[in-house]
Length: 322
Image 1 (cartoon, helix red, strand yellow):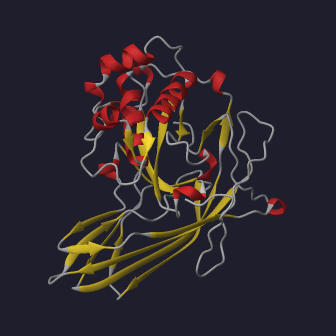
Image 2 (cartoon, rainbow, N blue to C red; image 1 turned 30 degrees about the vertical axis):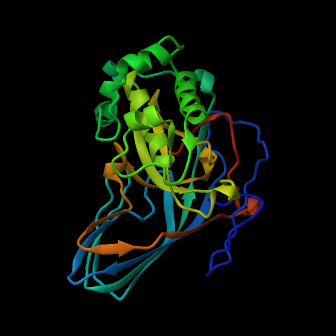
């Protein structure tokens, strides 16, 4: 998660991370200039005494507003990989079986992302009776987002707020201000209820808590796995990042409850109910892993329509209306 003072360099391309905080005049209801992101992921494993199976979710999602320009996949030693068709939300899974020994997965991609911005004051919540069927699953409790256990709490904290985007922003701000970001403070079993009690976590914990609180007041919310651009250098090198989409009006809007990255600096990989749906690697076998190595940069080329991400107080969406 690189920031302004210490831009990271990609070992092969010289990509550099910088964050543009320049304010731009809003053009509500319009798609703003394109943001082009280059990113690379390096995963390394040691497989024990028998072949193991892997399901990866590291490919750039393909949606109507995040388009794949190019990508490259290297597997060393070579293993036949099956790239599954994209899901309805654009997630792309890869399955492979590898023999004992070392395994290196390198994936790099360039994506173009279109962002639509709206005035928060104009965005209303969608009544349950009017929700599109495709959204139903994101208002139910799930493994890590036990919204059914938080209904009374959420009603007490947020039930009297004016409904709409501002209420969701208030939930996001509450999670951000009340929860401390601390690496290593949680594990794979940590849920939204745990984070509410402990008041500490990493990005996936922030996301789970915000999602659970939104669902607890009948607002559909879902978990996005990806990579973030524009985070402070003090937080360490780039990493996988979790953030939130909330369904309001007729579309999904982006929120990062950690406050680490501007919404326009987020690259989508997986979309699901919670982290259980979009793990970047699910392993079946006796395998040890190293810490992923990730690089990301935004192309700065206004003459050709490519802008660096900037922070904005407006509502931001990268999904077409439902």
